Length: 469
Image (cartoon, rainbow, N blue to C red; front, side):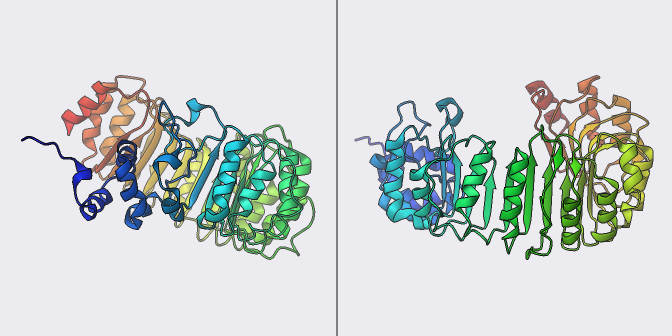
């Protein structure tokens, strides 16, 4: 008699040992195929550890055409202890489709369902990502049921906070907070309700109005353990007034990383430069998406002696070079990036850096000479203008696209860098003969890793690469 056996017919201990070796996608497939396997997956601590950074508690699964309530197919009581990450989405089905264990909140009934569930199970949640258009009292109550919450992220979709309590008691242990909301009242309401949050180590905030900067200044001043600060300014803002007052004497934290994203060149307040100067000796990473003024450049060069990573953005290389032509004196700098590296004087300065091994650029061109210390290059666009250079110790090259480089220059580059081990091309390939350009990949004799991530890569190109290998 012929019988058909599958995985679920094996003894439970054998099933668990088999499931341990499956990846997340395979485990998801098992969950959808067999209700019996659900029990093994969610009852086994060894398997649930795989879901530590991937499991988002779901009220509905948007991966199925006919979404089923997960609480009918999974024993929530057995699985809830391992839920450490919670994502709540209020987006269209098409956006959340294929997102693993997405949560789709459609109305208050389901939000209340989550509230009731978290009443006894929220203690295990460590990270929450909110992609809601509104944030009301129910949402606050859900957060208050997570006494061990460490990370909270609120997306730009959030534009309306209502019915907030005076203070939120149970999130005082937050170490990471991310608020990317376009509504000033949202930021104000949230910060006013979280005055007891003083242990943040990482803070990311989107700033859209001048008033936001006042609110943020007071909030930052009360932090004691802040290590990383990232400010994202709205493109319509013309000035940076953070901090809006002199808080340097009140600040107890020591920043290690500071990133400021700004699309247009702003006016910088004196308080901003004074704040940077007060943190200068502690900074290890400093990234600014605007041209620093002369005073700030002076602070960077003279005060940031422990800086290891510096990233700048500027539309005018000539003006910027005048202010930072002594930047090579930074003794600890190992990574340097500027969006436009086409100024010969700017590039020649690279030879003077004593420790820099990583070179980042938006457009990489007009380079000549030999750079012994550079082992890694990342550039969005590789240009051909007077391209005559050599990086004898270059091991890793990540290029956005090669549209601006001629085949002959690419051939010369590949012949000079036979020791290259890792090559990634993530955008458009060559403007000339692509096949001939691929042929020169043979010149990288030590190549161990080759990655194509661009949309222009087709099967014929991959076939040519395979034949070369």
